[in-house]
Image (tube, rainbow, N blue to C red; front, side, top):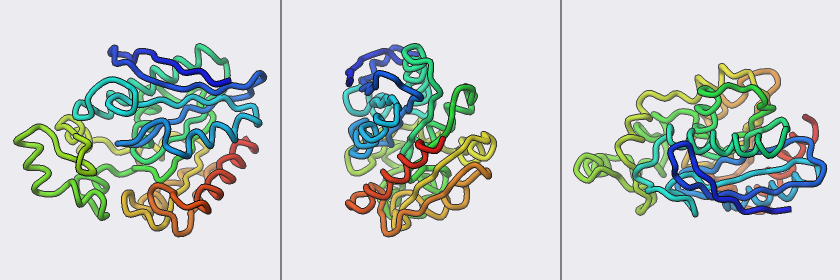
Length: 256
């Protein structure tokens, strides 16, 4: 059964989410999307449908300033996204007394890790990270790959100083507070400290988020796996990418 929900974050921002649940659930999954994306990024509805026969309920939602949730993109911060994720986690825990795994894509991975640093890992069964942002400095502030270099450059930082925002992908506004957070937050250090079973999947042709960084940090302990998606770019847009990702993710949950 699918249910559409609107509910408040911790500061009153209205969030928009979708529950998918089976009659006899065994566990639950919370899905966190990336920057300038939404809960309807194609993989998430697909994962939700494929996990349901395994007895896995799922919840996906739009972060503030994204999709159908309220808020402005230039007011987005990691701390605000952590608040949104915490409110969403609380919602599903009140609805289901189940162990929870988190699936997080791209920038959502950084948010997931900061959520777990702040609130702990009690009741969290595992992490699944898709093309994760693990080093904010090397991804954004001193970008190593073409996508971020198109936005995080001298002109972009001049716009940030003069207008209070810079543009990602030519239209998505990012404000000063988020940039300031990026200077101090180290998601890869958090991942190393958590000791959670972690499945990391990354395309080796990703020009947005570094495959090499993910490979360096994405298998933090002996209960974790790092899986390369050969030839895949950031959005896992080819049918063979989708097939391998789905098989791997479903297989991960089938063996938990």
